[in-house]
Length: 292
Image (cartoon, rainbow, N blue to C red; front, side):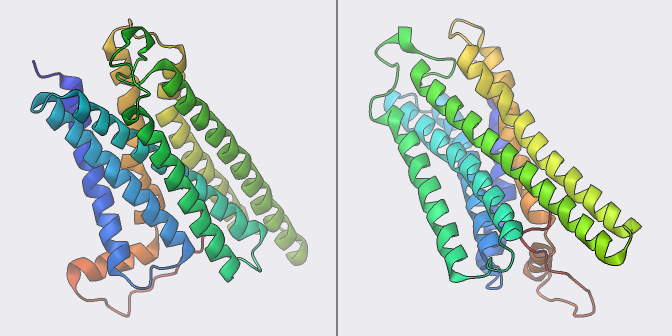
């Protein structure tokens, strides 16, 4: 029988794949989008695109081709894709922090090398995590070790959840530091101008609110699933797993809106891509990595 939860996951994967495929196409199509910031956004979009395709393939193989090998491959593919997505979010957070903390030296070759090193490490670790179930860390031959996400073992999902909690705490710390830097900059401007103008107050408040929305969306999407993976029991009804996993997939659906479609450079490239022309009289302001 067709499980409606599986259908919703497949629909979610289709939406994720379409949204992020557009972002990847825009970044690849536009030579101007080659800065470290857009490299990170492209990495995030690629990871989310693969995650969306993984959800679609998991649905197809679950109802069309039933095989233990295929099941392990699709689960490993999903683990690697979502791990790369979360790791790319961490890399973007680090990049935003560096663009504010080291503003004078940010646009240097050292920054480019740092970004590429972070991405290589993130994708390398994500690939290793995805290979663990395929290489034998699964519960196909020992049902007692199964977790709430079959065929992953309890120790496997505990490792994944612990990694997520560490990344979330690092992001929380960095965003708090970013808020401090933004408020300190606004205070310095106020001292130079002898008062804090309404525009500075609005800009500061908007920046802090945006950071709160970004971190809140990320936490609200993934925390329920990560916590349930630790405290849940495989004997619990599978609806609990679906109910926490589905919101986690929504994070990959929201990421393009937060990190790509709001950027005016990407909006301009999208205009060129779809319309084949760009009206010079339309003004666009390039957003720096520190813009939130």
